[in-house]
Image (tube, rainbow, N blue to C red; front, side, top):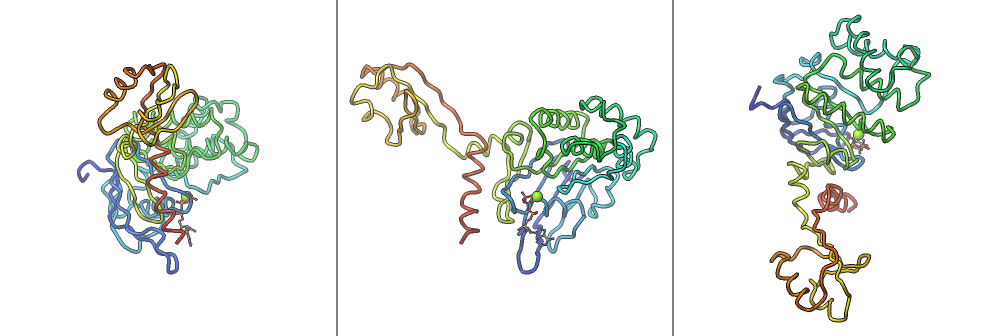
Length: 305
Ligand SMILES: Nc1ncnc2c1ncn2[C@@H]1O[C@H](COP(=O)(O)OP(=O)(O)OP(=O)(O)O)[C@@H](O)[C@H]1O
Ligand SMILES: [Mg+2]
């Protein structure tokens, strides 16, 4: 496979009417990676995933999926959780999982066997023989997820897999994604919940207004923002403010400011020398949430114009 990439896409364009809802997106997902496609509502994430999978055809651009220029040729090696969920309501949960596996070439009996084991491991052992219509929305979503991995695909594509799940099931899903990666699968998922992406992703693309605004690692995205210092003095005696960087603002008992370009040491010696002391100090890189807002903010403003 080209350069060990599970997915490559260059210059993907999709027009609906006269709108270019995906407008020249490039994506490269390494084999064995957990890769996130992030972006606000309407950014073009689902449309991009559908083009990658060959569910819809791009108007422009090229893509390759597990080495296939026609994505549908890789169908049996792929698992997919679409944004619009749906299972047959009259089917039993384990049959629904086995059925999804059978659609991707898995033996029916083997699928039913795996389904029972997987449901047990996912905390759904009690619902193996329940009909889908009896399950809660979140439980049905988990069943559909298990159905998308039961045939042990090489590539798993999940569109907003965390939405609609309670915190315990969100953790279970994170564990399932990591287990799939450890099994050797490549995982591509879309989300606008930054915390999951921050914990899981080896790489990510941020899309807004149909364009890719960022590609890299979580650390690289966070590195776009300066470190924040939170400093708590022993005493806030008059004169302290004049020693702090000009952006310093009060926070709790202390002060918050951006790390000075010269570092923190000189500033701390000055503060100690002037008798303000240090009762607390933390230096933090802002999280992916802030990086996302910084990257996507200008795009949202452009879209509003
Ligand atoms: N079949 C379609 N016909 C017309 N417009 C469409 C169609 N599918 C999507 N769009 C439009 O394309 C844009 C991108 O939609 P898309 O579903 O790809 O966004 P998204 O990033 O997945 O958003 P969300 O986070 O809400 O799921 C939206 O403005 C949407 O209205
Ligand atoms: Mg979507």
